[in-house]
Length: 223
Length: 405
Ligand SMILES: Nc1ncnc2c1ncn2[C@@H]1O[C@H](COP(=O)(O)OP(=O)(O)O)[C@@H](O)[C@H]1O
Ligand SMILES: [Mg+2]
Image (cartoon, protein in one colour):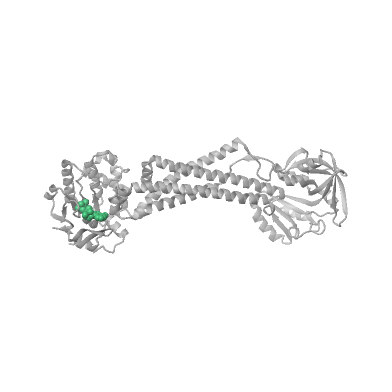
């Protein structure tokens, strides 16, 4: 069984004028289908950088990244986008919903990209909204629902395409404790029900209770 | 459809900004259409006037248009009636009118001046001239005038020069076809104006028989062909010049110097104005889409991250530009159409153009083509503007876009 993601000694340097900031150093991780992985570490330790690389929206400066067994070093922007729309889901700290689209439309959007027919889209979006408990809010705009509900919409949007891996960058950082717990539980349920792998950057110690893998980053290096 | 809906929602996101751009586009489109419609109305009127004064097609002796005659009527047409009959049998030709062009001196016994005369057939000539010949005083030439009492019509300025009244007697003096001098007494039947001061000073009209007897000839100078449709002129010209290759042919356009001049001038003026307006629309749309792109950088990053191709992102912004330009152009077209309608009811008079004496109604006659071309240009301009302003942002680093605040 090939891993979804496997990194081989990846490093990332940011050039800032003469200064070179090293955000990642020789990082090796691998995520299987069953992974519900926590990426821990203080602010500035390189969590976002690693997630961006795993999410195929950034590239390492050294090392290789294997996605479903394939080295994607030479993939074009278009090819990477195709992988992302088919096999990846994203959950952001700031929710990042499209403000002019309703809750329903936001969740439906990835299915439109995939060219799913209207009828099937309706079925799947309705079922998904049901799962995350937002069916009564389907016509609301993102601004008309609470932070926790927004993150539920984002989770629904990330999972609607049944991706292989969901990348979540501090998904609970903007939420109060109770809501954060709900969101963590929801993600875990989704992981169990859909068999989708997760990698979640977090400070939240409660995440650990669910996680089957933990990566601890410090100054860009795994501990 | 769903993309269009999304584009409309995004346009409505900043209503005031969208409204300003829509208004600029609307005013621009209306200005182009009204300006173009005015120019077109002018062209059509001048074309009609030129065609009616010379005939759509003029047929004459082979050398008539190119060489100078050494004696009058050297290049006249001899047996024209059979030719006229043959041409007349053509369905598209309404009138075939013989004409004798001649020059000479006109005198009232006290003073004289040079004239440019046309011998015409009163039966048709005044019918085809229609509204483009104004009778200021008296009447048009009689269809049957009494022998020994030939009539003349004088241009307004010439009448003024002689202080001539209706029924005054004048003498025409000219050279005959064999080079001797001949004179004929004529009675003033009417005074006309063409709207062109130079013509009104020199032109006289007589019956074609009068002209022929003054020149002692049976020949005519040319036959003017009046078609049913001005648009058919050039296809007819091509056909007839092949059929009657031994004759000389011209179209109304060959002598329509005023039409050509005005058209060149107006094309330049309205072309430049149109270009400036289009540039305004371009920058307005560019700016609007660009501001929208900058404000939505993070959203672009998000959409790209979750699997939207960069060209899909660009396309969505282009759609937004199209929504704006479509609404703007529709409003502009409505304004122009209403203006055109309003003017046709209001009958506002314009001051005479340079070289003219008569005013004319302000009208805007917008051809369907102009609507289509303007709509097409605005659409293309808007696609280019919104593409240019969103292309870079759709292709820039996703991580950078996501961390944009
Ligand atoms: N675009 C960038 N340019 C320069 N340095 C950056 C950039 N992004 C991140 N960094 C640096 O890389 C390091 C890791 O950042 P990041 O991955 O965002 O950490 P975390 O998500 O764990 O807080 C930090 O020192 C940060 O300052
Ligand atoms: Mg971070």
